[in-house]
Image (tube, rainbow, N blue to C red):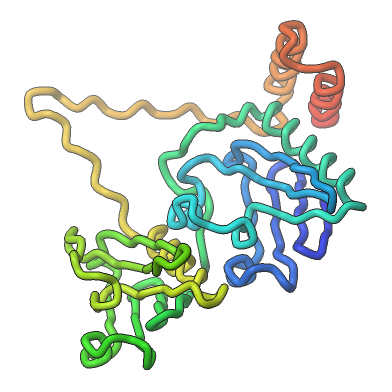
Length: 292
């Protein structure tokens, strides 16, 4: 077990899962998202970036694995990113050790760093709510509800709160406020994208960026995304018989003796090829031998 405890939060790794717990003063997005259990096969990489005050841990997930990152589309600030941790100066050694442990596990388990076909994390729990600006969005797992405040345009408040059943949602887009440009949380219906500005669209929140809480609208977007039905696969051409998909071979047990011996041979080949350093090879070899 490797772990690090800082004022910004706690990360721990047991060889299979990275557990992330936000600190009490973490960004509202991280606090509302709560504790995360990230399986090793969802991780693409990890790094520690030192600076004069300590540094920052960054866990890089495989593309498509996390609904929050999918909804954010690269627009989250560092402070709101649940996969970053600010590290104090006296904890840098522990941070570097944690990075080594995760990297060795990725190497031993041969986890690919490419994209995945579906979400590997469950996303925000429901009910969830968030937003600001001219209203609040909430989602209970079945229905999206938009309620307006006194700042909303009359075209929105006149119609009252909006309810949108999940089967009617065909898209959701979150954009934070940037500089003088307002952001939005928009829901598409029936495959159509509304041409109206967010301030007048009854299926959109306008986000002004006046508080950190507005960023929590991304959690509503993520909760909807992860529960939307996956698009139906394309039908096979009429003139060609669709071949049945191959049946994947059952995965061997994690501690299978032959599998571990094969991994030792693979590590030796990587070492002989100069891909692994002496220290990396020794550390990875010890980790495999412990499981034999």
